[in-house]
Image (cartoon, rainbow, N blue to C red; front, side):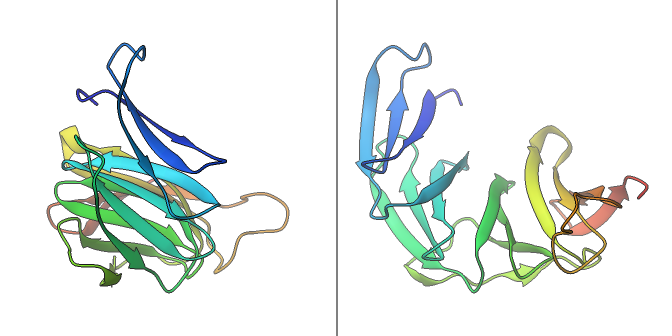
Length: 168
């Protein structure tokens, strides 16, 4: 981002904000989990998640002050933020959507995006076109032998509706 480069480290788990050149540390924050697996940045916040426990921490993007934490009903695979909305893929399938401004801490209140069934994996933000892209397999769980029949689905972040998808 224009604020700099965000890095998630392990042992110890922490978020590090470097200057845009990547040469100086601007801020650091401890992450209270040993298995942090992902980081997403958007709307002035940094999101860090773990698959077990099923927790999502949120930090201020400039200071890295922890603002809150959320629990989810499933393992979190991917997170992205576009247009004030937080999008998650979990082991429950489908694509989940929540307000990125949601505070205080506790269970994350989400809605499932209609029209996306099956195992979801990987997310990409496309803020210029107000879209989020998600990979979807036709089955309710990841296939054992690769992602046969997988497709990419585009969701309009202003409406929450599927607007395009690749052929299977």
